[in-house]
Each structure stands twice: as structure tokens, then as C-alpha cells.
Image (cartoon, rainbow, N blue to C red; front, side, top):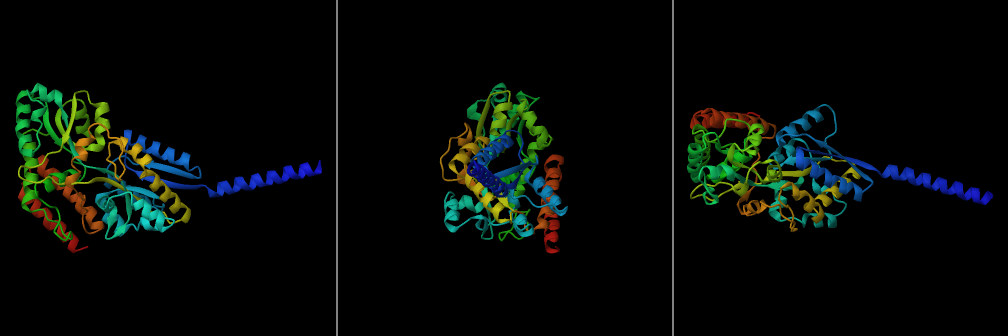
Length: 413
């Protein structure tokens, strides 16, 4: 009896120690992102699957609905208040230079347990895709989301205007003619909308017109080159003709979904939202280019960037990166509408084929130079751009003045 009691006590002690060890092995990491709706739901499904496979890792997901720039500002403010930066920050490709220079992220190389694991992870990507999250030779993040701009078309409006699928435009010049027909035949409808919240849409129209936003060495802004001026003038003309509604994206999206806008130029990431919410016959097409020019489209989306410094958190972050970029992870994640960022072949959402067909035109989403000065340049560009296209400010004078202001800002930082 005494031996049995001793055995029971010993087993209880062992189990108790195991429970303590298990609790000690538990690690919690945080993930910050900007998505809402369907995309937030799918991300949470990915997180839940990862935690089920890795019960010793808990992930606190923090969603801050808005744009990548707003998410970054929130993190900066949070860190300034003395709070730790997130273990994984899903940051836009256009903000990498600021993040790399000002916020000291933990490079992906430092997260890997060994070289073999790192090589296997990097081997999942093409060099071009991996480069999206590389800054000055440092892999400061790992690509997660990538998209390009497509055109969503309301075929009900087209048909009401006497137009067919053959009339879906491929260039801005063709789009102007189509919009004129829609304005005449359907005066209560708008012809087109190009997304406004950040520089991504701007760069798509500017680059495709043969323009640039930065000097060749990327150290200064260049707002007075011929292609940029032509692109912004074209955009302004659509507003002046009444083809584009004078509203922000927060108003344009419900307008499109309710059937008031014929063509909406925005990210392929929104494909599921439009399919679920639109009340009309929806078609997807490649985005617009310019006659005689090769289309150039900035790669939209974001990378997983880590600020983890603790060894256990680094290991957990690396494992999450491995999962999200695995075939299983990509099969789940691409249901958002984002494209597959690895070499794996995964099922396509209907309509994504138009976006995949445009990857040949991809180029990086340009970052503003100057670190913190770049954030101010971004704000000034968006403000002046809105005034030009929506309020009719003089294109050349406004861009010339803005170029001078921004380069002075870079010179005096």
C-alpha cells in the first residue's frame, strides 16, 4: 500500500512538473494588420489553423482597419507611448524604407533557427518576389500579400448604354470614349473611378504613361517629367468631364456595389467583396494602359515584418512565416483575392486570371526617400493630388511647386 501511495505521489509530481514546463514553453506573439471584412476573417482562419498545429504558440491578432500608412502611424504612436512594437507587422511595400531606417526591424535572417531552414524558406520565392521585402540588401520582411490593379466592370450599365463586353476599354483613351457614351445614355451613372487612398493607384497610371515619381537614383522627387504630367492631366480631365464622382473611396465602394459606377479601377484583393456585395452582372478585366506605352503596375500588398527580439518569439514568428508561405497557407490566404506569392500552384478565385496575366508588367511600389521626411512627402503629395484632380488646380504649376517643396524638405532634414 505504501509503495502504491509513493507511486501515485511520484506520478502526480511528474505530471505537475510537466504542466509547469508546458506553461513555461507557451509563447505569445502579436500580429498587426490593416484588413477588415472577408480578408480579416480569412487571416484569422489561417491563425487558428496555425495555433491548432502549434499549441504552444498563441497569436494575438490586432486589426486596425484602414490603409498601410495609417497602420504605420498607429504603430509609431503606440511605440512612442512606451509599448512594444508588434512581433509581426504587416506593412505595405511602399513603407519599407521608413521602417528599415527608423524602426529597426529584425531581419528574416535573424529569425531562422539555422541556415538550412532559411534557405528552404527563401527557396519558396522567385528572386523578384523576395525582393519586394528587401531593402538595401537586407531581407527586412517576407512577402505575404501581393496584388495588382484590375478593372471591375458593371455590365448592367454597359448594356443600358448600348455597350457590350467588346467595348470594355483597354486604354485610358478608349475609356474616355466609353465614359462619354455612358454619360449620354445613362446620365445618372458615372463612367469610372480610380482608387485614391494612397499612392498605389497614382503610380499605376503614372508609370503606365511613361512617368516616374522619383529621380533615377531615388534620392529626390520628380513631379515634372512628361509622363507624370500627362497621367495627372488625364486623371483630372475625367473629373472635369463628370466621368468620375467627386468622392473618397469610402463612398465610391458602396456606390459601385449599388450600381452607380460603370468601371472601378482598384486592387484584385477586393474581388470577393465585390462578388458578395454587387447587385449587377460583374466582369473583371485588366486595368487600363495608354496607347503606345507599355503598361507598368506597382506591386501592391504587404510583407510580414518582425520586431521580435526574444529568442522564443523569434522562433514562433519564423514558424508562422513558414506556415503562411507554405502551400497550405497560400491555399487558405489566396481566398482573399491576393495572388500567390510563392512558386506553388494554388487554386484561383474566378477573375484572378486577369490579375495574374498582368504580373508581367509588375514593378516595385516606390518608397519616398528621406525616412521620416518621406512620410511628410506622402501626405503633401496626396493632398495636392486631390486638389489637382478633384478641384481643378493647374497641373503643371501645382506639381512644379510641390516638387520644389518636397526636395527642399529632403535637403533640410
